[in-house]
Image 1 (tube, rainbow, N blue to C red):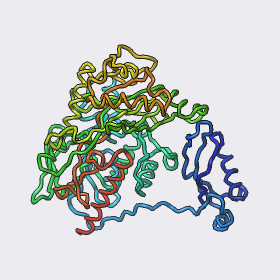
Image 2 (image 1 turned 180 degrees about the vertical axis):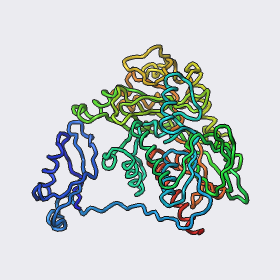
Image 3 (image 1 turned 180 degrees about the horizontal axis):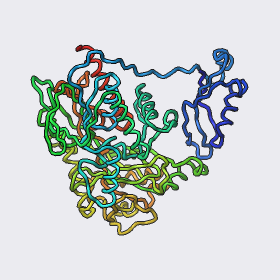
Length: 532
């Protein structure tokens, strides 16, 4: 197959016209094209008066080598198939199955790869299945009644299921293709295989994670919901079993391989690992708020006169301040909503979510400031969690101690004036907001940094510091404040315990977490083969 790359295509061109453009580029007739595959599609909006699609297109036709040779001046090359993940079946599998704790992207992909190798993993998840989880979250959004085991953080699919479902990543790893193909096989739209910034949306993710679970089960795995890891049992520094709790009953599962893919909110797991002196270290994380604008205003700023032709626009902003603090946007949710993401009674956390169509009125994004371990200098290795909880508790109280979120207008925030009512932008946080001063649930350095950054961001996106934009707090869980150390074989200081994914400190988003799950699974497969 030939690949035509870096094609600049007008945004109004339809599929049949693209075929004509490709044929002319290759100097062949349209009927000579046996097959045409869209390999990449991105919006180039660097010049607001000249926005276009940048595409790569694969073409199957006769005499491909001759065409490449004759068209030396065109951006054309032989298409090279991406590297595939090779998984060999284990012939003599051990009697005790590996246990995967957590069903976020790291846990699900780790279990899926282990199942493909014939290792029959047991997957445990403290929360409910996706359908039940959706109902529990909707109940929380309507009533403020929190289920501490099943919520936006916990349950099938992990925290990413109730987000925008972004699949773009800064990592460049061939296993990313495996993740995308698996999502597509599980019901994701085909476009995730070629668009530059793919996303799934919560509505798609709920079904996708169920289909991935069924793949694991059909391959011989077992998935147990409402099952919480409470302890590990080991001898001579080697894992022998784990202790779990389900429906009030406590029992052991014999295993010598435990993959801990519990996410950044399973604080009890970190406490359990600390009790057993598992080696961990503090790591940087971030804290801040969600900022909301009218999506149409973001579209106009990003796409100019083309704003009504390209769907919901996104953005990504960052600035490094003279104070050595960084302020940046994270997990931007076009056409989405701010969600109640608490997982503990008496603590308030916000996050963002979008459906696949991204067609709601508001855009929202985390607006975060970096937090360094020197900001929580206590000897406690879990001091970062204490730091998070301090401000989550403050936000809960400031919002009225009923899971309403504290909120403030950007104009009032910049003038140090409490907000008393909304402006032109209606907050989307589902339980409701309490107008107040958001600085009362933020560290002073975060408040100061946000005040410096907002005008700078307004220079990049017109209207970003709109006086009616809404700040809702507090967002503390963009990443884990602790890293569980592991060696070159992906094992912790207790052999057989494998820290994995975002919560363990080795990923930052759905794609990188899923890839880390694959890496850990492949390490276990290789070790199993060598030990046989």
